[in-house]
Image (cartoon, rainbow, N blue to C red; front, side, top):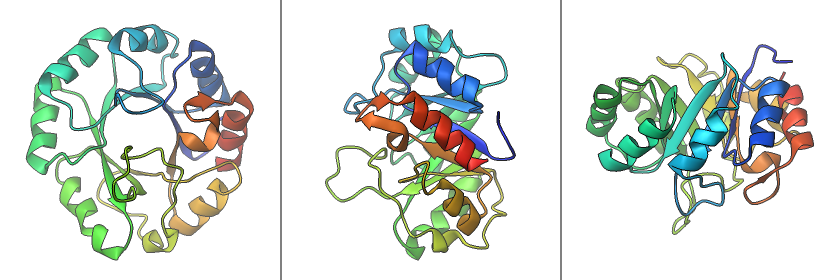
Length: 214
């Protein structure tokens, strides 16, 4: 059962894995609409998947630099609770999406070194939550879900950002407790760290991750 740490399992693609994650205590379930991702689902697939999500668990739509037309199709297909913006969306674009769809927005901030931290405060002005992830390598196809961590010491002592935030990037059942200890995170997000192959969730790893996160 869930503890004091909120867990988001991202990139779910099957009804069985949706149910496993929810039953194990995940507070957020993420569905990936980035076509290049091995975790991609169409709006029609998402409608089937989100129907399995119990009341009280947040359904999150992950998009990357999506157009209004793409977001229209996604939000019409399924009753999402939040939108996760994982691209290079500007502050103005984040604000416009919030106003158009009336949904809380999670803005992803990629971090590689201390120079990337000011963006967290910048986007705190408009985003409802922040997801602090490892910055992808140059020329990476995916903006996230690469199984990479960043130096968690960069966040040490910074647990009181102005908006709620999640820690992501290379988290696994083996390291999530240490990541929480080092950063003070109260929310964590995982995709590749609970998979047996790219895009293929492992029920035992999902359960182990949520248990380890506490």
